[in-house]
Structure formats: structure tokens, C-alpha cells
Image (cartoon, rainbow over all chains, first blue to last red; front, top):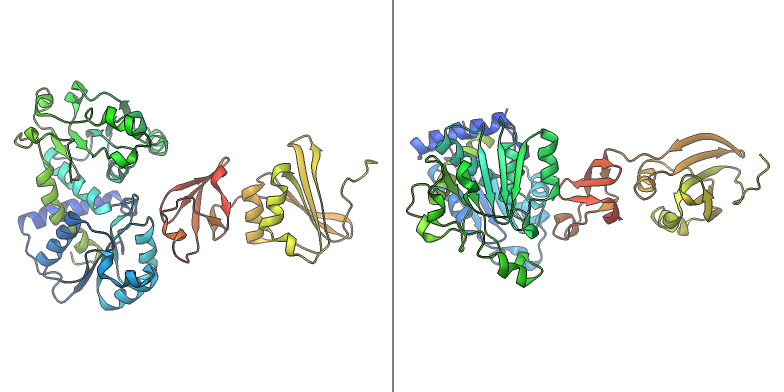
Length: 303
Length: 150
């Protein structure tokens, strides 16, 4: 049974997650497979996103598919005032699959209700970015050999960061995860996600200090602390240099520990970490191509 | 019972009772009773053991259903609807918030697509007391004090 769309990470079951992981590993071993030959995919980026768009378009190319679309809304008829409804209705008549990034939240769900062809959400505002979550999971299973019993430290902006929220939801279906949240009080993990974990009996710990507590980590998931998130600029100045990962902080961490980051980073991971074998964020981005090949194949029933 | 009625009785129609006093005019608004040609009487700041002060609305020849009752439930969760036939109460019901709210509530999230295009809003009710509605589009939660009826 194939899910027709991928809008929210919770649209997929644990079985779907595991199947995507298996397919991604298969595409990593053998990236060029002409499963999309003769198919056309719309890549609708209503706001720019270099990494996600190139990763999707690479995945589609490696599957032998063709791409139509736009890379920001200024080159589409949105500038003429066309609604998302009309754009989606029209494009879904042309193509076999829609990949969509849009600044408004809920836009991908709405498009999937209008479209006759499958829709993959490549990010809808601050809401969901499920393909990022799946590539994060693929990076975890690839480096740790498992998705069960993962002790993950999430660091930085845990309030607005959609990647940490979706990853939290996805990992919660596996055995005994432990979550450690490191954030300034202004950007702490929202109550609704803590309540979600409480209801499932999953352990989590909150910290404001970023220090040697990370020695227990299997994964450190870094995010950007963005200035525009703060109502008080003085608060930003106080915390902006607190949540920076430096190479000398990694001495007592597990040898198998890996550092993930959805990228782009600004200053939250010092460049001296890049040469440490525990730094995994660039490989993580590459994993995105294989994972997106897997997602497209899964949704379209090609594998 | 020889207590005088504070709001006069109706022959046929509906009595909406146990409305929190401060929400009385909201109920009148969401049901568009100000446009109604039916005879309507209402009272507010009446003593209530349950609410302290309550409001009551009596509408002649009008029987509410479906979406209208859901609207009442959202702003006056303890309200009671009494159906009156020939001056007798023939049916009493307590309004209840349904599991899904369709079309009547606005999503509180300004960045939600439903606030930018003509879309019928849909919410999953994740808590009835206090009211918490999860938007099926943006997935954000609209809480009781943020509920705006469209």
C-alpha cells in the first residue's frame, strides 16, 4: 500500500519510515535507476531554497525523470495574482508528480486536496518539511545502525525549528528514544511537544547550558539561533554565542557520535569542527538525494 | 414553582439557556439573530448557581441544528437548548463540541493558507475543555481564547 502524498511526517507509519530507509540505502549503492523515465515532475518553489530544490532535482534526474517548474514565485504567475488553487489545478494536469515549497503553512495539504497527482511537501512555512526528517533519520540509521534507543541532543532554536519538531515526532515511534533539549528559555521546546512526549511516556531533559552533558549523546542535532526570532535584541546578544559547538567540546563524546545540522549554518558550528570525523552535516545533505529518490519511488509505487 | 419568569415565555421555538453573561451578545451575533424576523427575547446578568451570571435567549419559531449548535458550543460550552412546543419543554439538550469543526472557525495563525485563499477551514478537536482546535492545514492549535467564529 502506497501513500499518495507526503505532506506531514505523521502521514507515514513506522513501516513506511523503515521502507524509505531501505530504499535509500539501495539508491546509495546504485543511484542511477531510470524508474521515472517518461515521467514529468513539477518542481514548484514559491520561495527559494537552494539545497532542497537541487537535492530534489538531482534525485529526479538520477531517476531519469524530466522537470518543469520555477525556483521562486517571481518567475511564476503568482506575481499576476494567481491563487495556489489555480496554479495547482493547472500544473497537476500537466505532470505526474508535484514537489512543492511554499511560504504559507498548510499550503501543501491544500494543494494535495486539489491535485490529481501526488504532492510532496518540500517545506510549508514553519510547519512541515518531511523529506528533511526522513533524510535525518536515514543519517541516523546509517551512522548508528539503528533508530531504536537513540539519545539525541537537540540544540539551538527548539521553539520555531520545524526540523526538530518533525524529527521528535518521527523518532517517537521507535523504541526508547531519549531527548535532550538545549536552548535559551526564549527558544525552548514548545509545551505541546513536551506534552506529546509525556503522553507517550518518552523521557526528555531540558538544559540551558551547552557543556559536557553532551558526552552521552548518540546524535547532536544543531540548529540556527536566528536573530529575528527574538523580541528583545539584548536577549539575542546574550545567547548568540552560547550555543556554539566547538571542536574542543567533543573530546569526551562517544566515538560513534555524529553531529547533524539541516544547514545552512551561520556560526553555531565552529569551522574547526568540520575536520572532526564526528561532523556529519555535509554527508547528511548528500543523504538527502538518496532519501528523496526513495520517497519519490515509494509514493509513486515505482519500487 | 411560583417564581416569576424574568424573560417571558414563548409558545413554540427554542430557549438557549446557561450562556455565560459576557458571551450573550456573541451568541446573538454568530447566529445572526440581529437579522432575524422572528420574535426574540433575551436577558442577561440573571442569577445562576452554575455560572454566577448567565444570559438566556428565547427565539420564537426557530429550531437550531447542526452547524448552528456547533457554533453555540464553541462560545458557550455549557449552554442548554430547550425546544418548546405549545409552552412546554419537549426536548432538552446540552450543546456538545463535535470532534471536528468545519468551516465556522477562523485559524488563529496569520500564516495559515486558510487565511489567504478561499478555503473551508477544518479543525480536529484535540481538547473540549479547555477548547483546543488543531488546524488540519497548518497543524497549529487554536485555543479557547483565540477562537474567532467566521
